[in-house]
Length: 432
Image 1 (cartoon, rainbow, N blue to C red):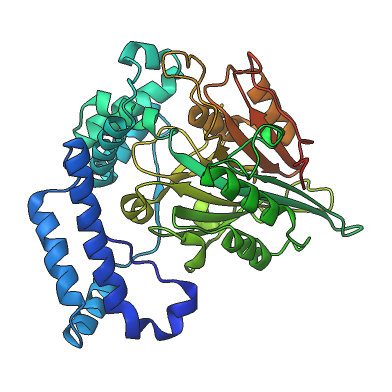
Image 2 (image 1 turned 135 degrees about the vertical axis):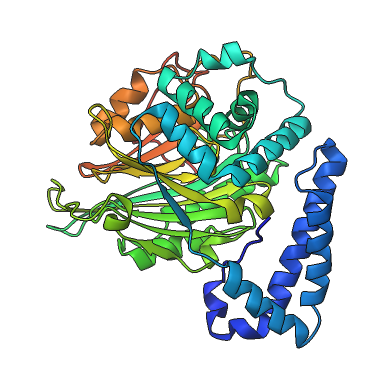
């Protein structure tokens, strides 16, 4: 398995001096975490021979002079830009086969990781029949195609998509500036509904709650600067050890700035992915923005950072007669979207509510990640995105932030309060 080869931005000028320590520690960390998870769950994430290799190579890298040489060679051989997979077929099953064949090793890792998560959570998953009732037929076909292409049991892909929503935490920040008067509107979201801040306070004996207040206020107090550099700095202000993806969506230019890592991803170098590399050459950047400059910035936080950071992939689905071309940023084996952009520039990102989640047997709504992908496939405006949410039975509690040519919107999805999706753009922290 590949370790995290990303380089922190503040060390790029003297990378050769500490590369051996950085990569030596990461090899040992990967081996240690794999062994600990196997001991806790009886599930093997990587083969024994590979485990021994990472330990031995990690020790060699920590050796002076020899370690420096090996680290630089290893970086030159294996460090790559974030993978972008362009699917050719418009048929859902064939798209799944393409993903399965191209990302076979990563899908296998995700399946093993899903087993570990399921074992540690000790929560029964829905049966195949019950879970398939919640997923549109085209997404079921895509999952079956992935299983075929990767030569893995279909049920393991279903497990991946069930557990992926359970451990995602995030910070999301959207900015809309009107060029006529320079006025900036901002929306932020973290791991709680802002409407719940009357129920939870930083004084509670839960570090997650205090951390959520801190990150939310940090984002809300950002200066009204809508530049890419400021958006990246905003993400770095709420960066933490679980951040595996940091993304800035430039809605106007239909471009993406992306950094990944096995923790603290926002401190890494950002890759600038231009629209022609995403949606193809000749794609126009012109949309009806009505003089608005719109950005969406997000940190995606997830446990198991050692394994998930290096395996981030962008998957681009082609347009069909009924669906827009979309680019989703996530992991192999996922059929939905936690972050993404479509050909019209509409972008979205989510933040899981960690403290209100129905049991799996009570959860009969559409999986949120599937709903979010359908928003990308069909919506061009925040109004259309909101209509999609409010016409769907919600699967679990999440904050969803959407940025589109017409503006920005935050939707607080809560199936325990409403039968169908509720949304609000006005919730604020009453303790601010």
